[in-house]
Length: 167
Image (cartoon, rainbow, N blue to C red; front, side, top):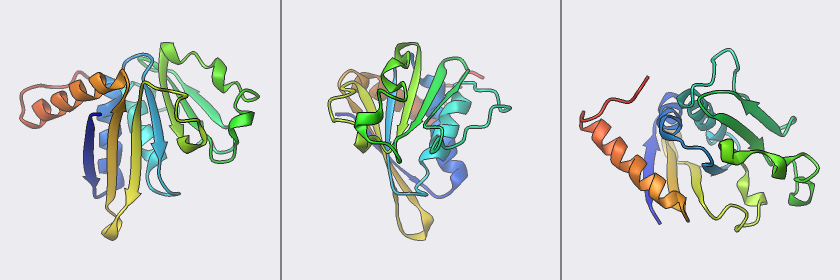
């Protein structure tokens, strides 16, 4: 498993990590998010949306009541919040009909899914630490491990000033 850990000191830093994830996201990529209420899951997904080129006129909000939001961008972003739903109800809301292969899926409260539902995925765990620091652990599973390793290499090159992201 490939894993990277960030310590975010602000909402802006959390958002920026999401932007970097979105800039390199590929069709079919699945992000499964875990973290307590207020840990920054939706903030990170807003960043992913920006990185995917979602129009700022389409604000990314938590789909706690609508359950699924779709945003157009370089790739479509499917944003799902499972906080108020059981696995048995996913079929009723159209979860299994989402054309994930054509876009990017970001799921909040992903622990409500069976562990094998998406064997190729990026697991993102957000944890609130003292002084409002967020620990953000990003781990690749299955085929997504390769994507994450390439993303980590890109981040390291960018930090060293060796690459410039498109946009």
